[in-house]
Amino acid sequence: MQVAQSPNDLLFNLTEIRPKCAVKRFRKSIIQDYPGERCAYCNAPATSWTLDHIIPKSKGGPTRRWNLARCCTHCNGSKSNHQVLPWWRPQTIWDEHREETLFSWMRENSSVESSAMIALEESLKKGTLDVDALQELKNPKPAREEYWDKYCSIHFDAPECLIYEC
Image (tube, rainbow, N blue to C red; front, top):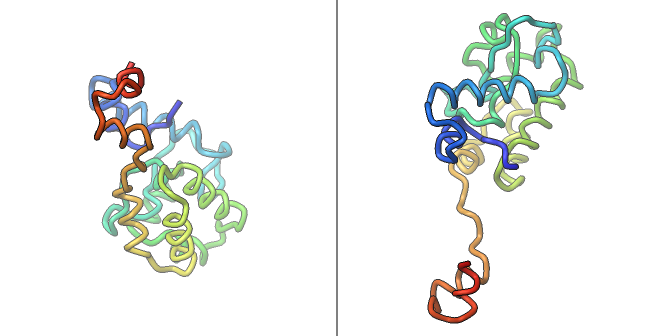
């Protein structure tokens, strides 16, 4: 089963009919699926979770599964619209293992080719933002057309295509 990358995926696939329900289900899935039981940044337990845009929306970060991390309200408010590592690393709450968990989450939940995600990760670790890689992740290229799709678009009345369509 494919994991929804945004609330719109739940609506377009008719998993949810109401936008409000799609957003709620999407948020809940990230909160449940994020590794561990504690805040992504400070490692504190929380009774209520928030979702933080790892790359802030104000800096072009999309509301996609790979760009959202489960965190406590204190960390989300403190981070605000700062870049993640320049905000996080100087603090006593920073931990190398949690940083790797965060980047692992981003890689595992990206639905596009890994070269763009790797370029974005490297730029974030340097404290910068690779805008080209971010743009590629925000607007992924359509999947490569398969042989039979291409063949049947040209020879739509060929017997193989009639069988293929069934």
